[in-house]
Image (cartoon, rainbow, N blue to C red; front, side, top):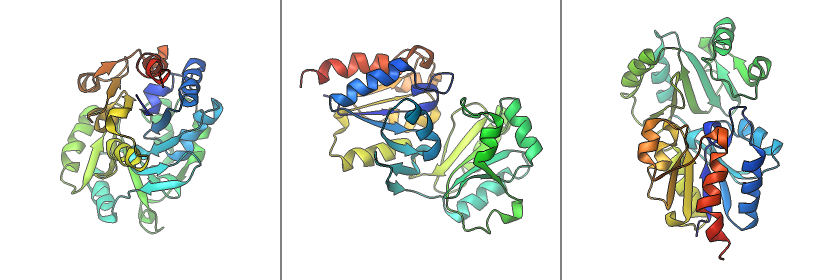
Length: 282
């Protein structure tokens, strides 16, 4: 029997409009009423993960920032893994000539050292990849714009860094440079970003630690995702690993099963077929 379902957000639980569909929300509530737990595993910050959940009337524990921080269902942080200051310095140095936009996700929220005009331009050309439910004003409010010289003067704790550029070729080159940074995990959620965390901060590691805390075995877990930053959990030896119909090819090849796209309530379909029939037997 499945006791824990770990689900990515963007491109997975959320539809193209950035919201949890009525069907996904209904099926998840049915699942939770049967005693099966939901764990959100997302690249978002905790605050940004809560918005669509609250709108849909759902509650869940959350692994956020690709595994850099974990919160229980009551909103208490139960785990965190920071990037070392030397890692952040090396990341900035590796990217300094590439004209990238940084999203530094910290204990004080998101900040960037980009010029606001470049930041705004990337938003409106769909390079910045804002979450679908946010307007530019909504995204702008989430960010603190810092002069580059102040980035390391504010005593910030860095959890995740997104490196954003419109050219996948530029990002491929940066990925090769960044491989030289010790202890760094490099993933991606789209063709225009790299997502950087400490190597101990990955969705799969955070999922394993959460399950151990809850005394849940790996053969009692289902995980669902769509992009490269889900690989660490979909490559685990779980009962079911499920790729969305809209997933990238690497994820489809990694997962044991495939469900419908996020535009067709793929999470609900997976739960209905792989979780609910067996939960009803207990």
